[in-house]
Image 1 (cartoon, rainbow, N blue to C red):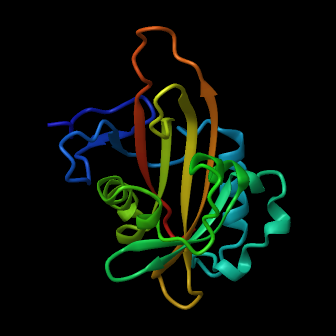
Image 2: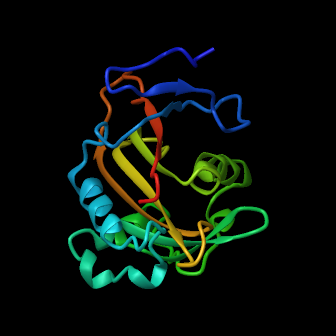
Length: 200
């Protein structure tokens, strides 16, 4: 019922890729990155594109943390562990680990970091990264929290094996600010955009 809704930037409302009837996010098919407003996310996108080779996704080996000092505390790398599509973190910056109560995320499966229903929701939201070679851009209420609103943006980009179009990992960045809600104010909304990368 959402398929005819569009925005001025040509984003098209699509059905949720999740099977959670209470999923609050709005989902969009978006043709380009004009909708992405966060400077750090744009900077990571430019870096990622600089590591593409012959139209293939960058490999994990091509990503040098020394190049990313400007956002290293917000960045994470994860490997795809099939089947099924589960993600194992290789590293996560300090700001990311703070969300998970300071726990080290190195080597942890996504399913070990959150309740099964929440992990399933996240995995389904990230699935177009694998199936369609899409970037995943989220804007709004990035995490659920009881007393504060973590509002901002998140960008997920695919990593490959250097030989095929298979997605074997991802690099992500989450850039948020914590807001204390006014009494009785509703939580911010979350928009999730899937953007085709077209061979980098």
